[in-house]
Every structure is written in structure tokens, then in C-alpha cells.
Image 1: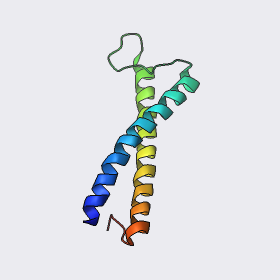
Image 2: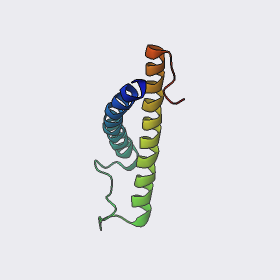
Image 3: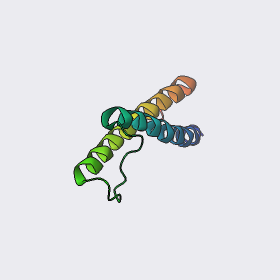
Image 4: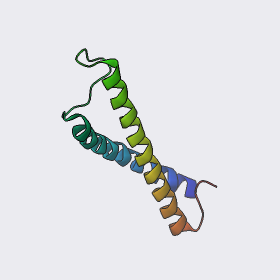
Length: 87
């Protein structure tokens, strides 16, 4: 039962995390590149360097946000149930 609750909360937090990381990345890209939108990998307007840097930043932001949300969710479940969900 506890694992089911954790999975449900985890799925919702994953969706929220994806949205939050997208917002954070967009703001970081505006600061770093001075442009509203990051380059798409298939866009002919940008070179390899800019596309790969944008992708690396986006991946790092997503990873950090996901880890933070996963950890906070696990701690919340542990506080509520007395059992760490990852064990």
C-alpha cells in the first residue's frame, strides 16, 4: 500500500518537476544567451556548439530538479508513514 501511495505521489511530482525544470531552464537560457528560446537540435539557425550547450544545461537542470523533488517526496512519505519508500 505504501509503495502504491509513493508511486502515485511520485508520478504527480514527476509531472510538476518536468514543468518546473522547463521554466527554470528557459530563464537560465534567457540569462546565458539573451534569447527567449533555446535552439532545437534540428534548427539550421544554430551551430553544434550552441545546440549541445543548450542541451547540456537543460539536462543538468532537469536532473537536479528531479532529484530534489524525488528526495523531498521520499522524505514526505517517510515522515507521514515512518517508512522510507526506497528501502
